[in-house]
Image (tube, rainbow, N blue to C red; front, side):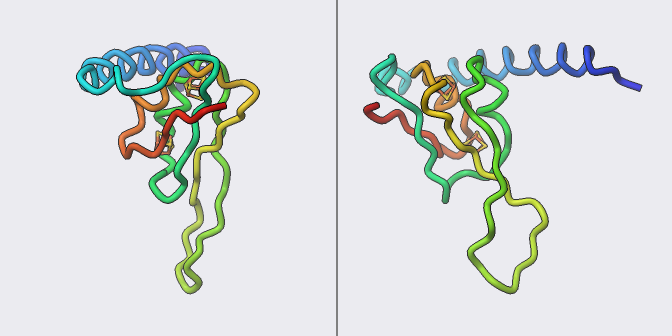
Length: 110
Ligand code: SF4
Ligand code: SF4
C-alpha cells in the first residue's frame, strides 16, 4: 500500500511537472497575467470544475476546495467542489492561473 510520504513525494513531482508544462504552454500569454504582492488570485466559480490543479501548484497554501451547493434543484451530485482563495496567504505568484485548465482564476488588484 502506498504510504503518505510516497503520496507526498508523487504530489510534489506532479506539481512541478504541471507547473513546468503549463508555463511552457502559456508562455505566450503569461506576460499578460498580473503578478506580484499588489495582486491576488480570484476564482470565477462558474468556470471552476474543482479539479485540484491549482492546489497542486500553490506553494503558499492559499487555496482550498470547498463544497458548493448546486444551484439546480432536482440534480443530486454528491461532490461539487470549488476552489477558494485565502487572500491573506496569496502572494500573487499567479501559478494557479497558469495551472487552471478552465481559465477560472484571474489576478485582480488586491
Ligand atoms: S484549477 Fe481551476 S478548475 Fe481546477 S479547482 Fe482550481 S480554479 Fe477550479
Ligand atoms: S497566486 Fe500563487 S499564492 Fe496566490 S493562490 Fe495562486 S498559486 Fe497560490
